[in-house]
Amino acid sequence: MHALALLRQFLLFFSLIVLIGLAAGPACIGDEDQSPTLPGDPIPTEPGDPVTPEPAEPVEPEEPTPTDPVEPKPSEPTPNDPRCLAWKYQRVECIKAPCEPIVTCLECDLGFRPEGAGCAPLMTDPYCQEFVLLDVQCVRYPCNPIAYCKTCMPGYFLGERGCEPTPPSEPTLPERMAILAERIQTLVGDAACANKSDCQSTGYGAKACGGPADYLVYSLRATDSSILLPLVDEYNQLSKTWIESQGLMGDCSVRMPHPVDCLEGHCGETDFDLIY
Image (cartoon, rainbow, N blue to C red):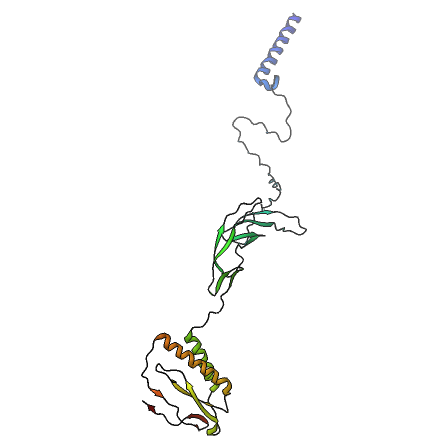
């Protein structure tokens, strides 16, 4: 009887332990996740508990990655001469930057030829006003045409050596007469005199019917007659030639010489008469 009572107590105790284990749940008898909680892990909460968000850790801004500076690509230089149509350039080594490239002109506008970095006139004659270009065949580029001067600037003529100054043309008969008359009047001047003996007169010019057109009064004191009288004779001859070449007619009046005198320090005629 005593053993049977002990068996009943053992079964009752074992049943009680099983009931207690079932009431406690898996947390007590069989947890699926038995990993320990580490610092920083979220704390498990019971259903219905308020969730408190953890403060976010500050994020440091990332430093920009340094990039190599991009060197600007140098633009292709152009010649300063606007008449250059085609050119090339090459870089040169220099000690101090910036290094300027060398520009060589290859082709120029019409009437110009390449010369270094620019263009030079194809026709080197500065007095050539118009020239003709002839295309030529050449072996080495660039090929420049040949220029021939066609017309020259005013005051120049086309000679064997290009445009040469036009020689002075022979003066016409009226121009020669005007030049002589000016020289004669310069020699006579104001015909200054001291007395009557200083004054003389000579025929001056020509008339269609013959004889002088007028008389020229001069002073022996102020004028060298050996220079004056040949000039007067030449003028008279030119005047006669001009009248004959133009077929001029006159009134055939005769101009006679008049007395001359020193009047107030200057030689002059004292009387004037026409004789028909």
